[in-house]
Image 1 (tube, rainbow, N blue to C red):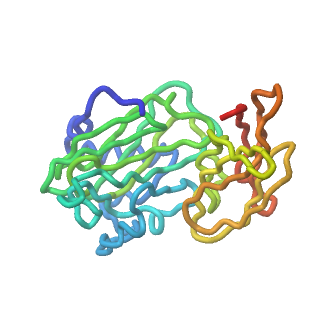
Image 2: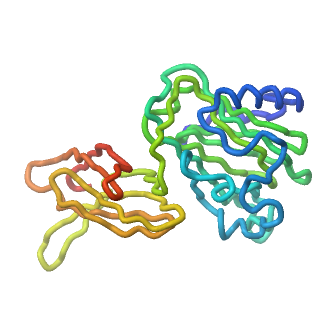
Image 3: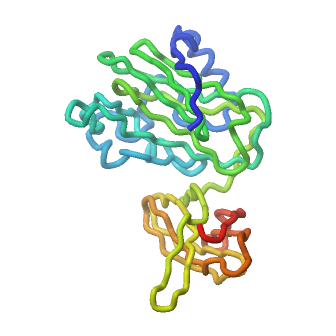
Length: 297
């Protein structure tokens, strides 16, 4: 991870409620994406108001929200627990260990090359029992914010160059203290353009496996291409097409999965190979890209 060399106070960014309100109004006009409603209420989010005990089963661990497909009512919780919260699997017997880091995934057809972007988080409440630290990571670049019960909003400002064309990730989690409750979240990034093809299939990453399989009976070696994906809400039949190799169709059930498409390992003098890859569902392209694999990885 790329660590920012300071921990910011949310109070410095927006100490007063008036400041938070003014900032939010501007964000509504320019947001690349906006999740939730700016109404000082969490009613539009999942599990609201009294189902937080279901958080572990529904949103625990590395949860994904796919901008353009996901909805707050189904795919984002109204509150995010910290290491001190027993209802989120924390507390003394859990060692006060941070364990929940949900992420927003968003695909950009155009990324800004300069300037500043802002990830804005408006809150309805923050626990009043524990000093709390919220961690935010933009494509691996880390920032941390100390917040308390008086915090109404956090503006995580970062260089727009941290974003790139293709799939981007904003990951967040409470690494110290207790829960926060959301009003709305948004990303402001001038000149960025959000793709419009989000579907129930989120393809987070495609890469060649750093290993090979060997068939002991034939001595043939195989190298998998790994597709890290999340299938939301309902099953899908996905077709994986890699130039020069037969297409493979797989039935994908809802949930997180890493799909493997095995290719013959590189042999002879060929040390590297570029692969053009297309993933589609019923003829609709969900992913198109190029990766490189190496011999002996």
